[in-house]
Length: 213
Ligand code: SAM
Image (cartoon, rainbow, N blue to C red; front, side, top):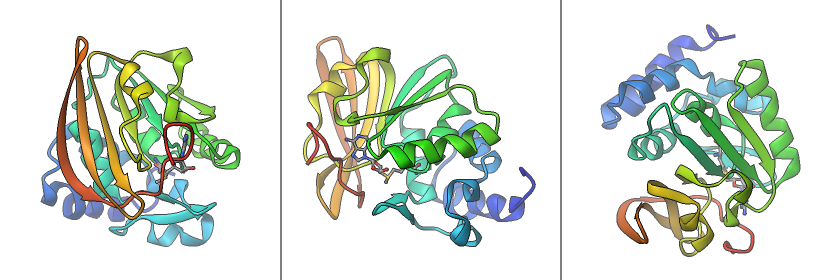
């Protein structure tokens, strides 16, 4: 299973990630290991290593590999850390995170997508990803706080519940803006203060729910 599309995966790592400035060796290794095609619908697997997002049903997408890598790298994760992902989608981002940190909690609003994402993760023997069904715009209180939070759907404004679920020195990356056009924002908690930096322009599907749209 890990050998399938291995050449395509190596090319993706070199041309789409390393060439664009992804240089964290652990992040690059995770992308080389995790078979992206397993997280895509059967009929579109042959395009799994192209430089773009793909539909996964319910009007949702598996994000472009470069954006997944960029957001992951910007969090500067340690292998002792616990991470929350909002927007499980296909489960691919969670699988990448599973190689880099101790524990991943991922929340998905659409039950069918959450249930589907569990299959490739189980097939790969991933045991440190916990999938929850619900409104992740309010985070996942039961397992908080988190050393890092990654939101993979666009929020109209940064959700306060998510900032409150960060540990001290915790980091969060998320797309903020209207549907169709957003900017990635990186937040860091320092005690009761939050530092914010604006990064790349991106285009994500909207974050639904109480602190979404
Ligand atoms: N990270 C995903 C992956 O690796 O495939 C891609 C996520 S897709 C771009 C955005 C996902 O966010 C969709 O699956 C959507 O259903 C989910 N979503 C939107 N609003 C949400 C919310 N309030 N709580 C949890 N998931 C949400």
